[in-house]
Length: 424
Image 1 (cartoon, rainbow, N blue to C red):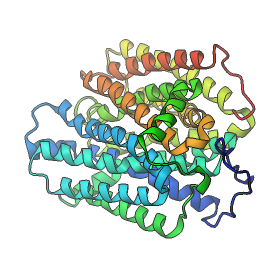
Image 2 (cartoon, rainbow, N blue to C red; image 1 turned 90 degrees about the vertical axis):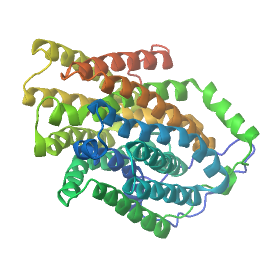
Image 3 (tube, rainbow, N blue to C red; image 1 turned 135 degrees about the vertical axis):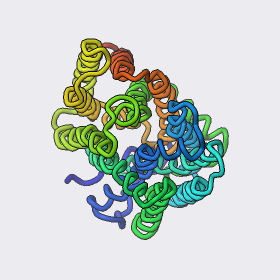
């Protein structure tokens, strides 16, 4: 492992050697930051097996309405990100992350005592607001310490751990249900948040260098926002990332219906099927972390996206050939392949979008996280609500959003695809 790369200081900052890092070693650093992001993943995926129990508890008439438990969470998660970055650029990463975890805890407690489905949706929004701190600050903390292909490699390792969580999250949710109530699912969320709070507060020092602190003012935030908006690379790759996030959200939102109640009727085997697909993503991010330094972010992510589009088109053909109900093994295989391929694009797109904006990493991560999450939630909502008892909406969603993402990347790179730069 090479030494961490400190990004260039903002204009006007003095040039002196960064202080000696007094925080955890590389492996522990990756684990802590990955856990920050994992709070988000488990808060979505371990609730999926509880959908039938929640539907029965609150007499939800339309099963598609249960998907709102995913999408309102993502709305709170997306909107709140616009705040955490500027605040962390002014106050530091530590106090803001710990404050966000406190909000997440409050939302989890409210969900446990929700008297109606509307209150449960409100609690999910609060959970999302709190979890957004982990999404923004995990990226900002990595950018505080790394840059270029080194950052892409670290982000891939973090994403690998982050993506392992969906493999086990539905199983955790199912185990909580076996204890007697869907409420226990939120107990598991509280436990994870508690571990994250304790570990982070004890082991992770402040990563924001004093020279990078920015005043908490509308003018400073506006200047940082305009810098981000003017950056073609940042906006282009963030847009592509948002479209691909929409694919993931569309699949997650309808996964319980596809595998359990609406199509394949797997019952207790639903977490296993979900884990197979998530495992493909985890394997790909591990491979990406190992080869991105050699091949570069752009060639690897562009190739992954192009292949993703091809498999997405094949997925549509498969659904049409079997009238929307292909054999489970065949559907799982194609879906897992597409999730494998998308994982060569998403971590690298995230790093490429933030790479030019090291001097405003917190604010940039905040705005780009807000943008990609809201775009992804909207696209995912369209795919999820189109569920009609077949696999066709997922295939069409993957193919159409993958094609749009490839066009956006081509615009971003002015048509020069598959070419690496100095850092990417």
